[in-house]
Length: 111
Image (cartoon, rainbow, N blue to C red; front, side, top):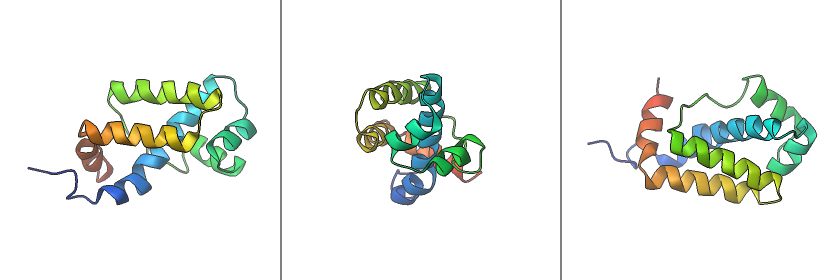
């Protein structure tokens, strides 16, 4: 059986999860009416990084389970309203790990 730790979860988080979550947060924040400069400020990244995520030059497209997609949308709204982006991303990652979605995502990233 594949365990969550056999695929170096930290590496998966840094190289795949965080960029994929940021990418989805950017899309959600854009739908909330935020400009690239506002999104960059809220996510603590550069405006150029926002552009790269939007133009698919950064952040692998990962199909998250619907429960996680909903959590990302909720987090985008929380970030828009002043919550810490880092804390929201950590909350999403913890939910992914708790529900063992990390194993599915790890296999998807290796495609």
